[in-house]
Image (cartoon, rainbow over all chains, first blue to last red; front, top):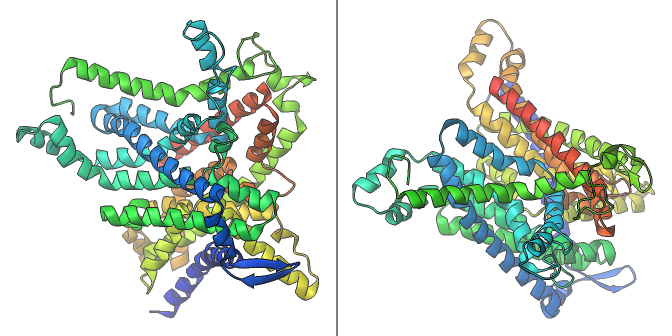
Length: 285
Length: 283
């Protein structure tokens, strides 16, 4: 390599190495180290797995963890089921201007902060909210109904919040499937169902995987939606992390929780990539 | 099911209806938020008490509008300050990364690329706490060793900027890298044949070509920073950006003031998105 090119390489490597090491790699290692500290006295610590033991022995922590995971998986599946037909419509049925208009319409809500979106659902779902009033006006119910502060409300919020991240990759992969291939499927005697199963879905697999990974990740790490739409009993794991760090100032336990969340999300992302034969570069890059 | 394959009319109608319902679902919360910004009532809920501009321009209690509410205005300023910082950093590092991955081949490049993508699959709150833990450790060490208090490493705007930058830089890299990939390298060589140095060629040929992507990355970074909540929540000090300030108010109970601020946010971000689309059309 010429010396000029070598210097260029070194100069371009500096920012990325600084960024990844100082803001990603070392902080995560440090978080793990902190999670291994056990407070044995004032300012005295020992290395142990005590925090993890606490996590596994306290039913509330473990239960919240599992609940967050299952609800995030459910939210991902629901989002996929809702988004797929819409993405297919945008990519394969709508034409020209309609297509770009519909696609743009999908993007608009997501330029607005998550807080505003969740706030909108609060106005809709609460006891004095629009839907409750509408139902009373239509005579379907006799008094105000509270639709906020339960798991269904959290689910609506999660699905709504992450919809875009499913629609965009799906539309992109579906657009790259030539219409002729679908026609050929029908010509060969396929039914709508078999064409979907054997042509469209396998082709869209990378989009399905990347969409699902992002939606799952966002749901798992969501704080706003579960806190605002969920009731007192519907805890989310991120709320536990927040309270350990900010309210109780128990960073050791909080770091252990954070590490468990990271472990869970990495495992699921890795598992999904393995299961479908995708790579991170293909789905994210 | 594509237009060239005939389908029963009923099925087609049902499908179209489904898509329509989907878009109503998408629009509903935003429309509701916008509409109640004009309700002449203390609460953003029915009954409708009549139309008012008060939640924007009102200056007397109980109706202090968004343009007269100091706390909110300050929070908007804080958010804008943070967003500009994050965008500038992200675009600079993103540009450097794009060149690194596009122009050089080196050992470990594949691994580095995967590392570069990782921040996208780490939950925002974990990014936040890991940076919080590490920065306070550094600050404590500095204090123990030399009684030197590094204010920037305590929760506050510097940490918020760094925390948001830690994952927005990835997005900036992807946006800029995508356009650099389409660049025709022979143009740069032509410039060098005409006597330009390497840096001059990059400055006069490549960077103008990248301009739409740079602006796009800046706007995306700005919007993402402006609406970020999770990472910010863990790193925020006494100056709260808008999302945090609004969250604190929401916990105490909401007034249509929050609707008014939300509507302004919607207008602002749509405007920015339009600017970006216009630039990308031109490029």
